[in-house]
Amino acid sequence: MGKLEKETIIFLHGIVGNKNAFKTEMETLENRYHCFAYDFYNPANLVDKEFSLEFLVDQLYSHFIKEKIEEAHLCTLSFGCIVATAFAKRYPDMVMSMTFVGGYLCNVPSQYHLNVEHVLGQKEQWEYVKWIDYCASLLNPNSVHLAEDSEKIYRDYALQLEPGTFEQALRIQLEFDSSSALAGTQLPVLWVMGEHDELFKGTLMSLHQLIPHVEYCELNHAGHAAHVHQHAQFMSVFQSFLKRKLVQLEY
Image (cartoon, rainbow, N blue to C red; front, side, top):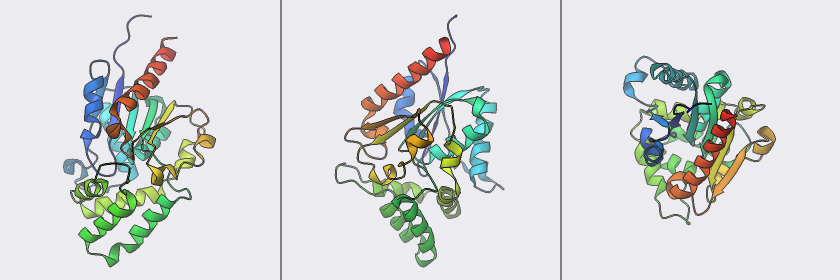
């Protein structure tokens, strides 16, 4: 077959942060792929709209339409895996593959699930900024193995969001049934975790039962944002995964 046009990769950020979550990776890949990212929390998009998972899925769909993207690889960080999974469930023909960095399963027995339930249950008992501190300590804990103040990063980005929006994003994690959404998927899935991302890895006990064909990889000396902590390791795994998908398409 003739030379293929560039494939598209859409990058989705986490519950906090913005479209720059994969900035370095996008710059590395931009000559070979169409790379696209956007902010979940753009105030212009939230006017008169309730923040919900349906909103997030519709938002992603609108970018497919606006950018004239027929199909794309989805590469996500953390909370972005929920958006990608829900989108792929609704529009499987528009998704070429899914890559989850620090991804997790929602609505399954785990310490992370209990922690989300706990911080939401405690919200009315705390002044808001103190509650955000509490969320940061329980939901994105530091690792003694990493020279990174992940609590501060989480806190600073969370405080940039409207309080109701951040709370609703947490509630989405309790309401979304990852297992049902992923069960039976035929899409290629690459699941990348940092070896020190213990809280989120604790949600993945049934991962291989849900997705027998999943390509699971742990990056050495990395935490939740594994692609940031070990960029070279991540790019090696990610580009190999994408290349195999391209070869399959050529044949």
